[in-house]
Every structure is written in C-alpha cells, then in structure tokens.
Amino acid sequence: MNKIPITSPSEDIILKLKVLAAEKESVRRKLAIAAQEKESVRRKLVVTAAKLAATANKLAATAKEKEVVRRKLVVTAKKLKMSHKTLEEKVLERTKSLEVVRAKERAILLSIGDGLIATDENGKIILINETAERLLGKKKEEVIGKIYSEITLLEDEQGTPVILEKHPVNMAMTKGTKTTGTTYYNMRNDNSKFPVSITVTPVILAGKVIGTIKVFRDITYEHEIDKAKTEFVSLVSHQLRTPLSTVNWYAEMLLEGDAGELNIKQKKYLDEVYRSNRRMVELVNALLDVSSLELGTFVIEPISTDICKLARNVIHEQKPQINARKIQFQFSCYKESSFMRADPKLLRMVMQNILSNSVKYTPIGGKIGLAISLVDKKNIQIKVSDTGYGIPRKQHSKIFTKLFRADNVRENDTDGTGLGLYIVKSIVEKSGGKIWFESPHENRGTTFYVTLPIGGITKNQQ
Image (cartoon, rainbow, N blue to C red; front, side):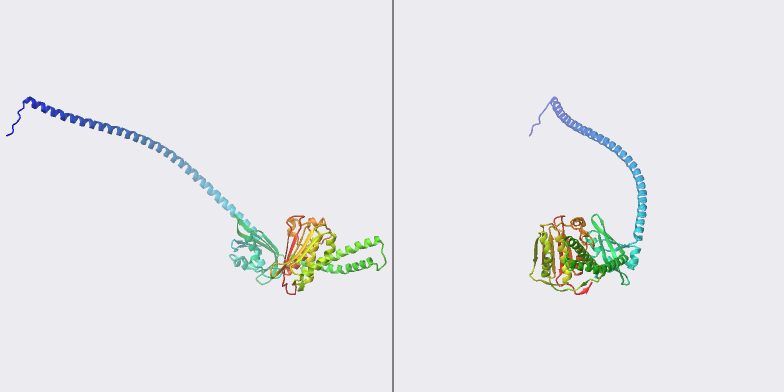
C-alpha cells in the first residue's frame, strides 16, 4: 500500500507558482520570437514598399517618355503624310514627263529616214519603224516578237547567205561592240534584193547586253554612182593605155639610139620621161584592175601552180631593189615544189604588191622575210615580214581601202598609188582566202599574212 505524500498548503502554492512562472516564461519567449518575426516581416515589407515605390516612379517616367514619343510620332506621321502626298505628286509629274520624253523618242525613232529594228536580249524584235517596214516589205504585226534572223535573208556580195555567227546583230550581241558593214544585201518579200549599209549597236545595262538597235539604209543609189564612176575610170584608163604605151615604146627606141645618138643631157631628160611614163602605165593598169574588180568583170582562171617556184620568180624580179638597199632577205617554202590551184597571174600580183611594199618601205640595211607554209591540209599561208616603217596604229583600219597611203610612208615615197593593197585584198577574198597584218609599233616593221585554199576555186568570172 502506497503512501500518499502529505504537503503543506504553502508548498502547493509555491509549486503552482513555479509552474505558472515556467508557463509565463514560455509564453514570453514565444512572444519574443513572434515579435522578431513581425520585425523581420515589417522590414521586408518596408523593402518591398521601397521597391514598389521605385517601380512606380519608373513606370511614371516611362509613361511620360511614352507620351513624349507618342506626340513625336503623331508629328512625324503628319509630316510623312504631307511628304507622301508631295512625293506622290512629284512621282506623278515625273512619270508624265518621262512618258512625254519616251513618246518623243519613240516618235523620233519611228520617223527617222533609215530603217530601224530593235531587239531584246534574246534577239526578238520589239520595235520596227515605218522605213524598215517599207524597205523589207513587211508589216509591224508580222515581225514583232520574232527572231531578227527569221524576218529577212541577209546575203554577202557573192550572194551567199550570211551565217548566224557572222550576222551583224549576233556579233553585236555576243561581243558587246558596235558592228558596221556595207557589203550586205537584204531580201524583200518578193525575193528582190537591195544593197544595205548596216550599223548594229548593243544596248548595255550594268555591263550586260539587254538588246540591240539595228539601223540600215538602202544604198542602191550609192552603188549606182560607184558603178558609173568605176565605168568612167575604166573607160578613161583604156583610152590612156594606148598613147602611154606608144610614148613608152618610142622613149625606149630613143634611149637605145634607134633615132641616133643622144647627148648626156638629152638622155637624162628622156630617161625621166621614160620613168614617169612607166609610173603612169602602172597607175593605169592598177586603175583597170580596180575597175574590173568593182564591175565584176575580173576573171579568175585557176590552174595547178607551183607556188614556191612562183615566189622565187617574184623575188628574182625584186632582187635589184633588194640588193640596192642592202636588205638582208630570207626565203623559205615548206616544200621544194608545192602545187596548188590558183590563177598564177593573180597570185603573182598578190606577192609582187606585198613584197614590193616591204622593199620600198624598209630602210637601207633592214631585214625582209618571205615564208610559205601549210596552215592545215586545206590552206596555205604566205607570210611577208619586214623591219620597215610600220603602220601607224590609228590608221590600221584604213590600210586596205582604196587610194589610202599611211602618213609615214608618204613622207618617204611620193610615187605610190594607194591601190596595191586594195587590189590584193580583193583578189585574195575573191579567191576564197584571207589577208591581215600585224604592226604593233611604228618604225618596228610590219608582217602581212595571206591564207589561200590549196584546192583553189573553180574557174569563173567574178
């Protein structure tokens, strides 16, 4: 049996007071902790309030800036609207001005006296004027949108159709340079043809050819004038040949003493007459050759010809002049004996003219070379090079024209006719060959090249 402790009333009160004191201390501590938490929360709230205040200030400033920007945008919008209206008016005015200019230019192009055809970059016709319609016998509706080479046939002087690669329009488009020519014939709808002078200019934009402008005109009248002039020259030359031959014959007889001995002074004067007469005979013969070429009465009679032998004969004829000028001469032929179909008379004329020019226009002690070689199985090449006066670069394009003589050779030789190279070029081209030259610097010589078909051409009358 447990004993129940017996306490006095004062101890019980003390115990209760201790318990109550412990509870109060616990509550106090809890309240202290709660106060600390409240302080922490208060401080956080203060920081948050400060941040919110700062954010509010920033938002207020941003709102002000936005308002300023908005007002500026409103002002800018008004200005843009006014500028747009002004620009629109200017564009409209400029467009009208350009339309007027284009209309004027089109009217000018369509009304010019020469035929005009414009193509795009693909060679399709986009414009043709009334003159071109009349010359070709075709209406605008028939040709617009078609390829230039399809609307009319273009022929050369021999009546051979011009191939596409050699067509002036194609050459202007592929090379990007102006192309001109006066040796073409255009065909009409009725198959009649007429001579034309053609100039084709490429239209270039940003370095690219975007089309061409072809201008052409009927030169029938000019051809008729040239023919009449050539016929007159031919007639006069024929009439001059007989008396000149007579003068030449009698001068030779007098110089040989057939009419008695002449004194030194008489011989000197008569010799000058004889040499001047020979130059006149050469000029008349050259004029007759030119007339025959231009009138189409020049006869080519090709036969089997030893070109190496013929070249040696031509050199032998020039030998006195070569020796007199102390020229170092070299000759080479790819074979000892080489035959080709050619007219020996005309081939001799070609070699004589080129070689005699080299001899005349090469200073004393210079060098001349004549070489004959095979280009390929079908063509032979004649090359004549010298160390003479050369040809001024600015006159290269005129060297094969009629009656032309370069400035530098006129100073050194006053007796030339200016017909030799014109005749040579005509003979070579009518024989199916080509001729060209190289003279890069004045006073440093010239090299002429002639290529001829070994098979030649059939006998005909050009």
